[in-house]
Image 1: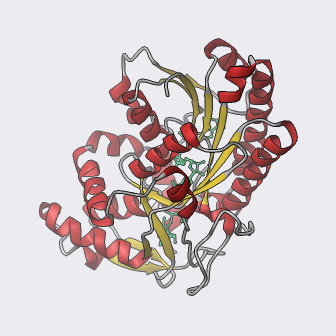
Image 2: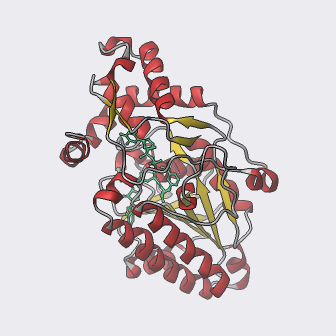
Length: 355
Ligand code: NAD
Ligand code: TYD
């Protein structure tokens, strides 16, 4: 498929990986991103000078701006990545999560609906509003519970997951009430290049390279289902092209791991890949710290629908994906230094000092 896509949040982690992939498929991208602390134009530097990547700094809640972008560029799809995305920040300060994830998505939906209604029938039939969401909306699993399916009831436990659940409900309602051709994806924990180092994988690997403590919450036995970001982006492309409007697709890596196992694997890989750091064995830096309030114990995603209907399955193995990720952070020191700005340092002090 080719055409123009309005991508929101395309300067963040997953959004930028998706934009780079779409440009290699020749789709024109209009990239609307507010450039919060998590947005970074260095993620998109490969596209400098590319006339088919149009970057616009702005808010998904700015209706006049969204209206103008839809009218000017006539996209065949909106792909909504824009969000506040970090659970710990949502515990410290939830307001921006409500504002962007719920209110912002509402404004984006309103403008997409008005635009879609004006499209001629044939283009209207092809239009899609793809909303990128999380498995965290389903709540927490016990050790023997089956993985989340698309029919698992929503039971969000953090302000972050509650705000994503709210946005999912609105997206679903705009399909059922107004017929806007929306699709929702609920995805597990991503890792890979360009992830902001407040999340587990990059935080641990960058701390380890600097000989800083590796702060594992609680007993380290909370489980997440890990997915390499390129696999996620491939799934999103398929869902956009061939998914059914009104449908939800779960996306996961079939790769359940306890946090301590992730951290130990990162340390072992760093011992091989970065012996010159001076901190090997990096595992000696592991430090157990006070648990996150309301910390969900286990997530696991049943991807059988997307496998069956769209023939997608994650390709990257955990060890190779983690190796590629570590290599990217070692090779991209300029990026790493750029994100460790004053506000990042302030967050690390607030979040981890005395924990
Ligand atoms: P991220 O925090 O790295 O990036 C979010 C981007 O959205 C940033 O570039 C930021 O500047 C932008 N943004 C924030 N508020 C905005 C606003 N009001 N208007 C426009 N842009 C705004 O997040 P990510 O990890 O890339 O996640 C992308 C999406 O995927 C989110 O919706 C998230 O909930 C979802 N998701 C993420 C994961 C994961 O493991 N990272 C897993 C499942 C789902
Ligand atoms: P995170 O990357 O914040 O993703 P999420 O909470 O959305 O799943 O955290 C992944 C897991 O790692 C989660 O169980 C919390 C844990 N964690 C730590 O143990 N230490 C840390 O410093 C961070 C950021 C996370």
